[in-house]
Image (cartoon, rainbow, N blue to C red; front, side):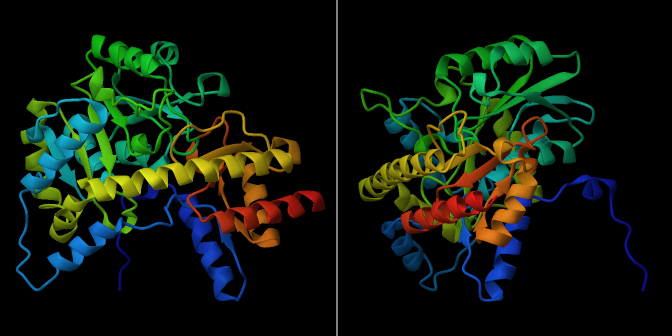
Length: 393
């Protein structure tokens, strides 16, 4: 039997090492070891109770047909209302595309905007799947080094310095995976202005936006849509709403792009999961939003615990996070690369982490991501184990 030839596109896609370390952790658990998993960005809470109840009701045996390719109209209206209530932004439901997770939103956006050879600017460090999706559609991704001085984020100066005649788009994630840091609102507006003035598209990943800290007056952070209504903004039900396995997300696109996204969605996915869409309507009730806000406060407490614990065992965090549920710490002082640190921490201490190699090139050897989406008990145990491991070094 002949072996099928693998495409160059597939050969070029690197493994997602966070998942690889997760597989190693699972293998060790199968051998009977207790592993503290701080490697994956998966909230331990699950979906709010009202959403779980809504899913049970949806699965009562009724026919569950395909929804419209752009999503259930009622859900698109609910998302529009959420932008108005939470972020003070008026978003026409006709501009909202419901997708099979934020990943599908990124695939549709790349298909709609990227031609082979187009250059896309993305900060380094950044979520690896973003650049892999862009490259799969032929983009030439330029990873722009981001340092602690710029909060490990793109800024307008670095975008201008990296711009070439081939640049067609800029992608920003705020708050970011792996750093948990956000781009200040004024800086984000300047980045979008710089790209817009040059005729380039702007894609802003706001998957962790609603897990961000509120300001001194208790106001939530602003969406990029408040200063750049024509940006493409991607979001998800996975993080703030705790629905990781439900595979449901959305994006907001310029009005002229909506029919393009619809055509692509019809051909690529037909639609997102109908039961998940019906259940997700319960996310926007007062009850569910109160649950999600309580969980956001819990993540802030866990962050404080982790930052204090890392400081006590001598692992510096160059920029404290202000959103998401990640800490990006520096292991250069241990004499190990980030990969060596994570391998040994897993094998010797039973703690699963993610090396910087996943997230770029420029700080990949010296930094490690810790996810504090795990329980408080696991975080305390993981930090204690890491402390013992470092003493052994």
